Image (cartoon, rainbow, N blue to C red; front, top):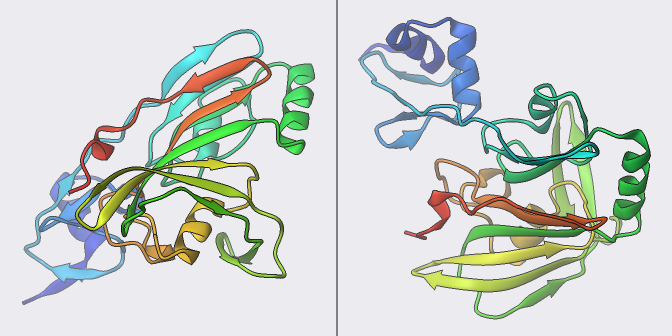
Length: 243
């Protein structure tokens, strides 16, 4: 059977440019035979057919003269979200993480908000689906070190790392998966992902940290509160069932 690079086959099927095809694959929106196509340059059978999911739109949760709260889709970077608005990012979510992202419109308010983050006075709650059975609450206070390679990052628990605190609460167990609530006091790079991996509960879809393959990273920024504001992003439909 003749083989060809996945992005070239997708470009032909969808009648789009090679660059556009690569972008769709990199966003995790392309599937073949029920599995996500993870590598744009990976070779597939020349007669392969693809299913392409639509790129979700950014939804505005709240906006006033100081702040904009938006619901970020799992397939967009925080920087791409920022480009859509006349405001500055206050914080970031990983590309694969969906949920509440805050942008600031007022410079004085931005300074106050940054101080809230610095002094750990911001409430940040996530929902995650993990591999394994989480049967009781867990408090994780293990330092994390982050290693940068080019444009990518990888974090791990290390005595040489920076202080990191994560609180885990079980919500549901179904088969060999668990839905959990995660509250973080610190904001280290990939903190939740690294901490859960260290416990043997990697997030579903988080192959970088040992999770099983899935159509997306099953981590969602559900709630955030600061300076009297409280924002919530509804739980995505993928989180309603664990199987």
